[in-house]
Image (cartoon, rainbow, N blue to C red; front, side, top):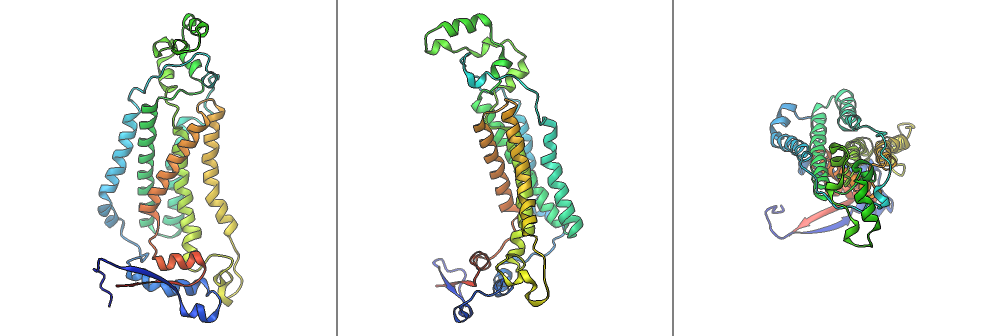
Length: 335
């Protein structure tokens, strides 16, 4: 028996003898069957867990997620970094426009849509309220991380929005003096030169990154990863997905329709919705394209980290490699 406490181990990957003798890949069901023992040995058994047990187990995770949300909103009240600006800078001289996608509507991508999807699919559809608990926890942690990171960078960077001049309304005399001044520091105006509404000026100094975009990609990213896990990858590693596997056709039990395209559609549509919200921020002169890109990265990365730690179903390396390569792979550990 292998000594699991041995400090020095090496991993040798070898194809199963059945695969080598047959010269063809086994079915997906066979692949998973060969590795099911590894999953059970590693504790990777997907059994329902009482929600009360999960609440106790994840109490600190819930606390951490909620504290990040509170901290993120608190940071938003900090006075942003104030930059000098050039009154003839075309990149911040766009006209002010109403929001195509208002701030209050951000409750739709996070948390309304994710919670509805979790409840309908796992709660009502599968009677797995423990899955709903883990998914909602992941959403809270991802949302808190997104809000905190976004607001910290907004306040620290203080980048000017494309409609900053319109919001600032700098003194005409100072603008004329700055424009007539030869190139150099003298052409820039201080923050005190603004005469516009204070709240608009403050808001116009928080362009990077886009909060609408990061928030939307966080919520829709969680939904996409959740659906990808439940509809596609989970089925594939359980022997029920992949057009090149025998399990796709029922293994002689009759024809089975393929829903791969619909599953792909379900995974991509949430991300498309988030992308459209980001595009609207550029069209409304609220953000530069780089603000939107950075916001998408923040939101997606937060969603991915939450998925890895809370949503992703554990799977042994044997099963993962077998599914990825389409053939039976066994990792043997030896001293």
